[in-house]
Length: 95
Image (cartoon, rainbow, N blue to C red; front, side):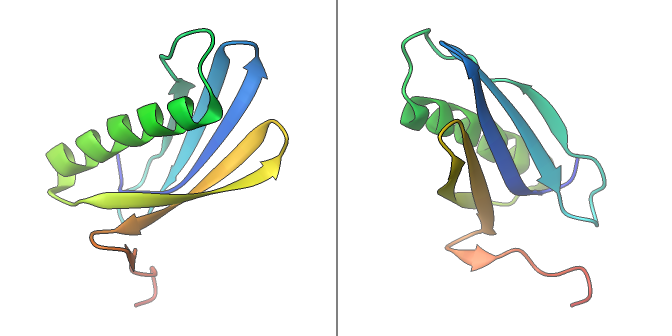
């Protein structure tokens, strides 16, 4: 798994949240799954849960801290733009 650079969060139905993350080119694979939150969870709850999971995994596998800035794409989807460390963007693949 590479370092996440973008997260897509979708609400599929009441209490059903799915995500996909895209990893940086250096690390290869991204992933997808379901966010394990209660059925009455808000979008902020789902965003926090997936962020914690990816931040913990990235810290463990790569020794890197990340943070995320979320933006709405539609009423049922959000994109999280992942940044490296203290708000620094992830390096571009051609850098």
